[in-house]
Image 1 (cartoon, rainbow, N blue to C red):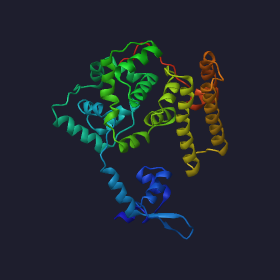
Image 2: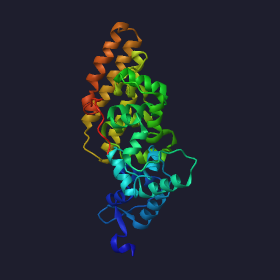
Image 3: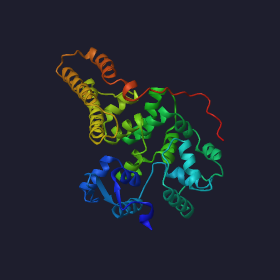
Image 4: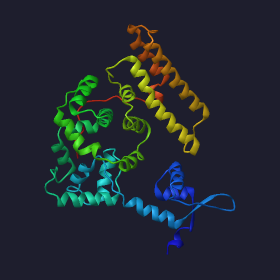
Length: 326
């Protein structure tokens, strides 16, 4: 019986655990009329188990698309089951996929012969056929840069130019397209799938990709350390879009107690945004000579928003001999 293992009324913490949601999403579900908590004598919110199970069933039937779906389909040919595929996803630093989603990919790969797939008998053979695109997959900074640029609608030729400009590496557009095809087919994802994927991201990658998703393009350029190709005032102004998103994220975290954020943290970030906008206004009004504006941007932004503090330590990308694929 259902009631044998679970209480009929669940705490907020248990509801969040069962539905894999945050405290903020818990309150959003209440506002949307999906959950109807009952106040206990101690004035604690308790949610009926039947409502939670109904929502869990609803969530499980929603369609899901992951950007590396084509890799999952290929992986069904060199693995025995969904658990093995998830182990391989973890090895490649991709969030694990729901088991039923992997099985759906397996059925689709076997049933639809029109879809061109790499169908090899081992992971090593798959990587060999993948070709030079595996180099993008294996280098964290290069991979993150490619993924963020795809998210802000940059084509493979533009991505090729950015990679050449920052890393001095030459990749054919076909190699970049191959990586996107198997590991970052972003354009196929609906908002619910994006939300599911983002829930598994952390730290620098989460901030950067959420900024890219909200089209804070200039902030993404700065964070990736690539030439923004525009006016300094634009760089300063539009970089604040990412910071404003970060501020909203911190405010929600503070309100819902999801981590240790102080009012001082919020105040400091607000000051940073104000200072950047003030500097942008000075550039537009001619108070800063043209020749000094780039120096202002290069000096002020890192001091205001240190990459080490905001994104953690910037990792260098090493292009030595790739490790042998097992």
